[in-house]
Length: 72
Image (cartoon, rainbow, N blue to C red):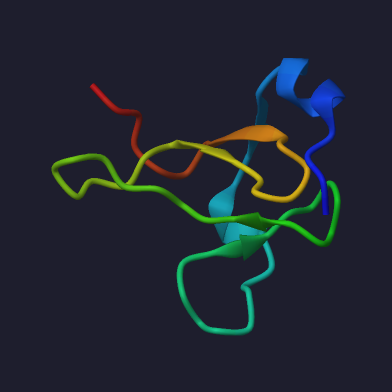
């Protein structure tokens, strides 16, 4: 799958991590609700804290998780 350049310019979409479908391997990764083929990997910062912002590795859509703490 190729990243859609339109998604790189779109606004960040706010959603809840807990509402997303888990990827089969049981990791923290979730299925992208926009392209249904990509993955939202759930990144961590250098200190190991979960980051509230993410980007689909399939379509490039940016998201902000409303149920994960905002970085300082």
